[in-house]
Image (cartoon, rainbow, N blue to C red; front, side, top):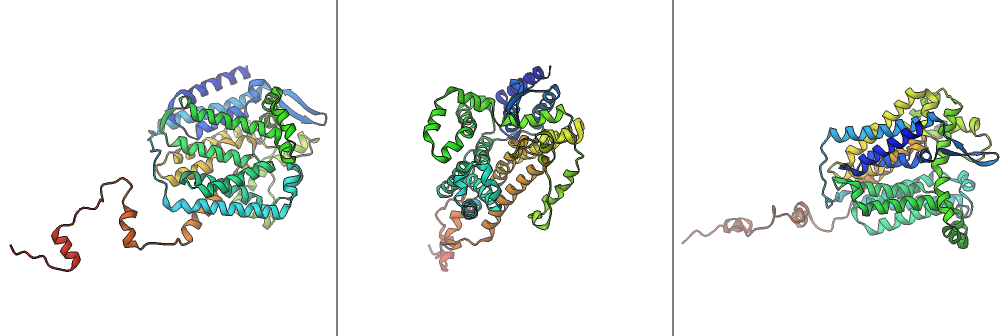
Length: 449
C-alpha cells in the first residue's frame, strides 16, 4: 500500500512540476531531488552495509509514508507558493550589477589560495590516496577551496567573465578529481537555477535543451562515482572497460548513494531507534565561527546512530535528515522538519524571482544545498554548510565593496557613460541651444538683429 501511494504521489507531483506553466524555483528543484534520493522507493529495497559485505533489505511500510509526506509537502508547498504571488518575467538580458564583477575574481583567488594551502597541508597524498585515507589530514583550507570556488564560478558565469570562470572550473575539477562531487554538483545546479529563474513562467518539460543537459549532468555524477579511483590512479583501461559494460550503468543507479542513505531511514524506523534530541541544543554553536577552536565539539546524528545500528562499518556513513527527525520525535518532529524545509524553499523561491541580480545570485548559491542536498545530511551539518556558503558570498561581496577600484577616467568624463543605460534614448545628447552654448563659454549672446 505504501509503495502504491508512493507511485501516485510521484506521478501527481511530476505532472504538476513538469507540465504546469510556472516559474522554475526551489520547489521544482526540491521535488527533483526528492525523486532522486527517494529512488529506492521505486525498487522496494535499500542497500545495507554490514560485516558480510552488502545486501539488499526490503523497505518497511512506515518508510514509504515518510517519503510520501516529504514529497506531498513539496507539492503542496509549490502550489501554495504559486498562488501567493504572480510570477513576473525577468528579462534574460537583465544587466549584471557592475559592482559585483570583482567578486568573481575574489572567489577565484580565495579558492585558489585554499587549494594551494590544502596541497601544502596534505601533500601528494591528496592525489595519491583514496578519499577515506586522506580525509583525516584535511583542515579548514579544503573548505575555503570548495566554498569560494562555488561562489566564484556562479558569479563569473552570471557576469560572463572568462578568467575567473576558468580558474574556478579548474578548482572544481581538481576537487572532483580527488574524490569530492558535492561542489561540482552545487555549481551545475546553481547555474541551472539562475538561468531558468530568468525565464518567468514556462512549461518545464518543453524546455528540452536544458532538460537534456540536466539528464546528462545527473548521469555523469552517478557514473563518475564508479570510476573515480581508476581515474585517480591512471587505470584508463579499467575505465574504458567499465564504460563499455552495460551492467555498470545499471549497478551505478541501483547501488548508488540514495540506496545507502535511505537504508539509514529504513533501519531507524525498523528498529524504532530513538535519541533524546539533546544534540540539537548544540545548534547555537553555529552562530559562532570557529566555535570548535573555543572547545565546542558538537555531535551530529551520525555519532549517535552509526555505532548502534551499523557497528561493523568502519568508514563514515552519510546522514539522513528525515531519519533524525523520526528518531528525535516521531511523526510530530518529522512534520516540524518538513515545515522548516518548506520555509527555506519558500524564502529561496521568493529571492530567486527577484528583479535584483544580487538577490537572485545569492539565492541560487545559498539555497541550492538546502533544496537538493538536505536528504543526506542531519540538521547540524546542513546548517553548517549553509553558514559556509553565506560567509563565502558575503566575504566576496564585502571585499568588492571595501577594496578601492582604479579609476582611469574622471567623473566628468565618465558621467554620461555611467548613468545612461545601454540602448536608452532618454539621456541622448542633443544639439545645445545658442543660449546654452554661450552660457557654457561664459559669453553673452548677441541679440542684435
